[in-house]
Length: 313
Ligand SMILES: [Zn+2]
Image (cartoon, rainbow, N blue to C red; front, side, top):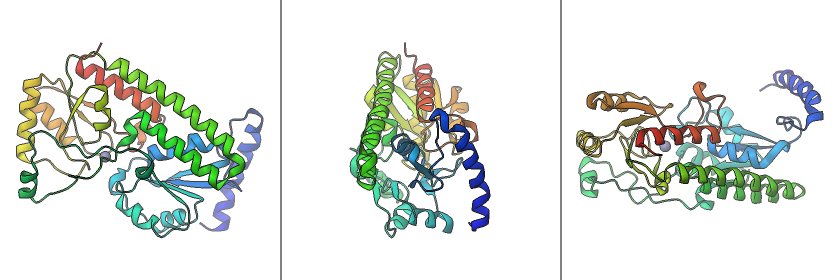
């Protein structure tokens, strides 16, 4: 961006900052001389923002409405990474980001290093042999990257972000620790809501579009994905036949799709079997439809959707 182009929006930010300075609600005052973190997709950006507070600007590399798994970086985003004071990413989730971050000067916080990741789930009826025969030996033996759907694991990332920020800016250490504790409090509350809300359900089998929800299994649900760990890992005819059987046998009422990828597969499956199709958001990113939401509100919407689908009281 040229200097002139940069000065114009900055003037607006400064005016807004001056107006807001009295009420302590500044969120955007880092633009001029504050520090800047770059997070590679939404849940990482959300946590980093909560912990970093007002003295930092947090940029999300994945634009709203974009599915983050297959993010490709343009020159501007590469420069953004290179000039950041901190990069927060999850190794293994976005290969293009991993490759670029390996060459940047900024300190990199890798969520996969600080959060206890689950192994990639092996789903019933899929054997290693079948996969080998089909020529896709994806994921097996790897870890499942979608840890943010477990509020307590996201709280662990908040703690790690606070530690990393304190290393970069020791003067702010107390603030970062306090912010991380506040986020942990909110996430533990959310965890209690899930535990209570899903404690008593008529059904546990939950059919979802891609294999993003295993971290919610500890609340007692069994997730059956139509696609693989990545939304573009398409199911085979045998996978679909097995799911149809399961939906009939277990009395599944709802097939869940998501917002950032096509709902076609989920809708077709639901139509064929005369069951409902509804949205369960893997919260990999925001979109136009969820621009006013945040991680916490989307998690609560997901909880309501899961309770409805599974007859939880
Ligand atoms: Zn995913």
